[in-house]
Length: 302
Image (cartoon, rainbow, N blue to C red; front, side, top):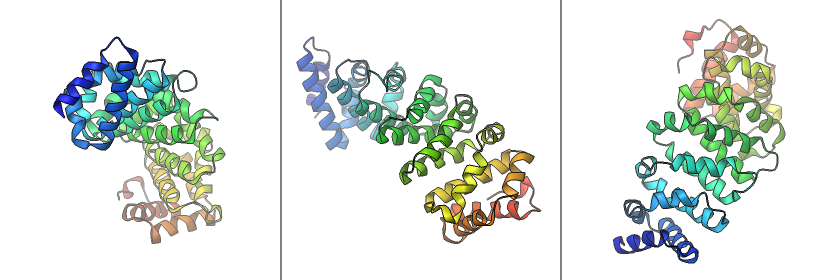
């Protein structure tokens, strides 16, 4: 396997486009089917070549390079993050999502980010790349983005939002408006579930209150909780988490809207309290304290 990896990586530097294309296809297949091959291929020096290929005008080559990077990232994140220019190459693919990049390469690149973001030490690094964050937001804003691209972009945004100091940047780059627009316009359950998961994270910062009120975010979240809306359990849990984070981090405006929510939404919170996951139940209990009055911000620890 070591010999094969070295041979294929050597072919990536060939002057022959056919030779390079064949090597890319083989590397993609190897890293897909053999977990042990991923680190071996990375150590053989493949990643700089793969990153460079993300700039290729050939969709086949771009697809294979992006998919191979994704496969490697599942098992070996450090070699990717230590490769100079890798994040810039991923940014290039994402920033051209509506023009020259292939949809499959965009999806693999966003999924690679999500895979890298599993390691919490990489969250501030990737979150500091405003060009990447901006492109991910643009993907979810674009009305004709493929559903798979939207889902992969949402997962990457979720990973970025897990680091608290990234949330203000997400707000500054327009994430809140894009996310609530997606909730309002996209009826696909899976998309709304992933969108509300990102919203719940972004809600957990001081800057969230004014931005959420600007886009009637609290009202949208309350609508999702209403038992008459028919939201999935995951959507309701995410919504409870978002409202609780807003109450914790926000001021009187949010608290007033939360306390004024209609009975159907309160029933939705109670449903999470009774039927949700352990985390969902504890958040629902804390949110109900706020809705019913008498709770202070410091009472909401769960």
